Image (spheres, helix red, strand yellow):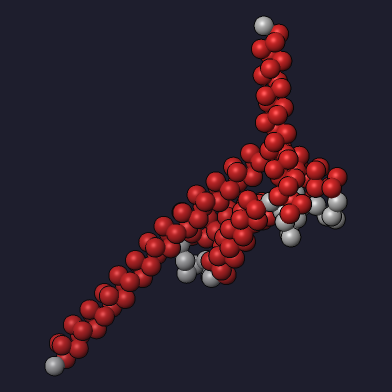
Length: 156
C-alpha cells in the first residue's frame, strides 16, 4: 500500500515539475519575460481596463447606473490582475529568477484563471448592457423622428 502512495507522489511531482519547466522555458524565451498565456491575459485585461475607463468618463447621470457600477468593478479587478501579472515577470534576467517566477506562476495559476474568468463575465455583462443601451437610444431616436414626421405632416 505504501508503494501506491509513493508512486502517486512521484507522479504528482513529475507533473508539477513539467509545468514549472514549461513556464521556465516560456519565460526564458520570451522577450517580455512573461509566459505567452500571461501576455494574452495582460493584453485582454489592458483592453478591458481602457474600455471601462471610457465608460466611467461619461457623466454617471447620463448612462445606466448599473453599467457604471459594472465598469468600476471591472476596472478594480483588472488593476489587481495587472499588478499580479507584473509581479510574475522577472525583474532582471537570470536563470534562477526565471525558475523562481515559474514556481510562483504555477502557485498562482488558479487565482489568475479565476480572475480572468470574472473579467470575461464582466466583459459579457458590459457588452450586453451597452447593446441594450444602444437599442434604447435607437428607439428614442426613431420615436423622435416619427414624432417630427407627424408634426410636419399636420402642419401641411
